[in-house]
Image 1 (cartoon, one colour):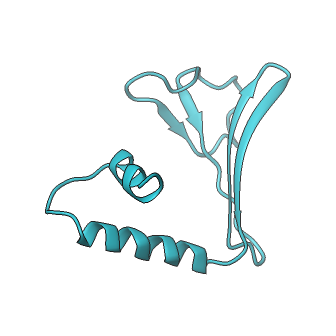
Image 2 (cartoon, rainbow, N blue to C red):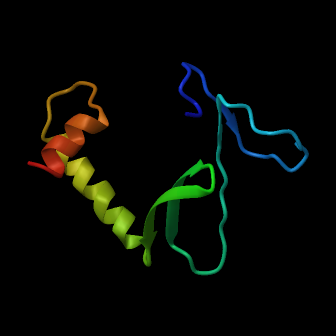
Amino acid sequence: MRGQGRNPKIVTDRSALHDPRDPDSIGIASLRGGTVAGEHTVTWFGSDERLEIRHVADDRVIFAHGALKIARWLASKPEGVYDMNALLKDIVHG
């Protein structure tokens, strides 16, 4: 599986590269245009197949609602460092 090492190589531009991708690299691409508020796809490529997880937002206000929800959550916590697991445990599953 790509990028499993401690320091995977992030590749954001392959336009000048013609060799196969390094097995320890992770390719990242960004595309913006039109009235798209947010469209995010994570893709795993295999031999002759691919798996995609996709999120589409039709309005940027959904991101503001999420930011406010997280800000309220943080304000209710004592000073410290929190990771996504703590946030998801309380907000999504709490």
